[in-house]
Amino acid sequence: MDKTTHFGYKQVAESEKAAKVAEVFHSVAAQYDLMNDLMSAGLHRLWKRFAVAQAGLRPGMKVLDVAGGTADLTRLFLKEVGETGTVLLTDINFSMLREGRDRMLNEGWTPPTVQCDGERLPFPDNYFNCVSVAFGLRNMTHKDQALAEMNRVLKPGGRLLVLEFSKVWKPLEPAYDLYSFKLLPLMGKLIARDAASYQYLAESIRMHPGQEELKTMMETAGFAKVSYHNLTAGVVALHKGFKV
Amino acid sequence: LISPGLITAALIERSLNHLLLQSPGATEALRRHAGRSVRFDLTLAQYDCRIADDGCFSEAVVDAPDAIIRPTPALVARLPFFGREALRHAEYSGDPALLATLDRVFKQLNWDVEADLAPLVGDIAAHRLHALGRDTLAGIAHTFSAFGRNASEYMVEEAELMARGVDVARFNHAVDVLADDAARLDARLRLLESRQPLQDAHPRIA
Image 1 (cartoon, one colour):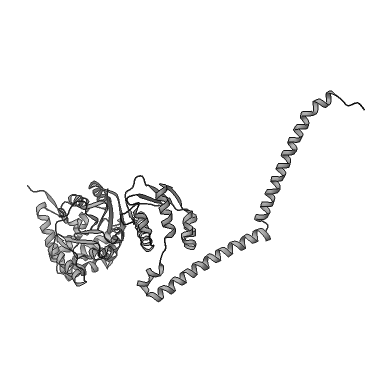
Image 2 (cartoon, each protein chain N blue to C red):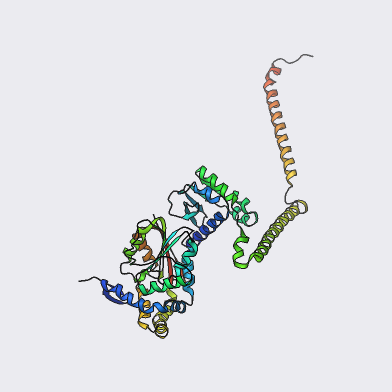
């Protein structure tokens, strides 16, 4: 029998999770940026800028944006690495990748975009100076495998940035739960006409490892000097680790 | 909820590299030491980095750094007013060749404030803001310097809590002379004491 994994609060066969996550993102892709702005009151832009500031990028560097979706990080990375650098936008979901690619083309950027699975990256070993995954690791079936793949494609000394929802500061939990399970699905229903996807978002955040757990996972995957920084009282955390 | 290390490291890395890229010849000099590691020991936080192939600093995992730079409180206090001059107040240890390069590079670092402000506020405003900031810092430095001079003058001349340098030097010289005289007298007395028994054995007859 196929192993099971969580899809929000539900248990599904591992082989089914990717397709179910894909359904969610196919459904929300068109309204993704608008919903991000509404759900986070624009804070997601600051979180992403903070992540890019931690990347230590300079002109000429190579960056891989895993699960880059609508290319928010990719566009910020492109400004840092300049014309001599390379930023690769990847996502497993074609709808999201198309949104990201079109946005970049509209703004005059033409970076390579690759549809691929974060758990099986089609890139050589020791190739990138920086790998980032923002709000994507949560949806991967085998997070340990994905982290190991990111470690493989990084150059020694390169850094991984994981920006992801995390465990919120304890006193804020009741308010955060109320917001996540009542308001988010309602907003999804009214704006994106899809309450179920935003219910999944809230549930998947709760099922995602907390700050310390993710730090341990990154260390197990081979990263050194792993540290994290809580943003907005732990609603989101940025983890940073180095390949040695 | 706060881990200052992550922010501090990013700030140091970005600021240092920005200054290196603005200072002609700095990255070229450091490129010769590519791969070597440097630790900035800030007491509360520690920033470990390697010199990358492009001559910039890149945060890294370092067990035994090739060079350690430890800024002192004097450096932090003087940096806004004295700029590069204040860098001599840092403590350096490690590989001499690397330290010599780092010392040379740091002394030639030059922050082009005007160039950084120009894209944000325009060329003219950037020039004026830079001049305003420079004059303000110079004014603050002058104020502190004048305050220090006045305070020392009051303590020396009015309250007589402290001695003037020249008086201390004169006093020290007098103490040295007195010590020499005392030593000579002591030697003479010892000589005289050593002759005493001979005089007692043969009293002079009038």
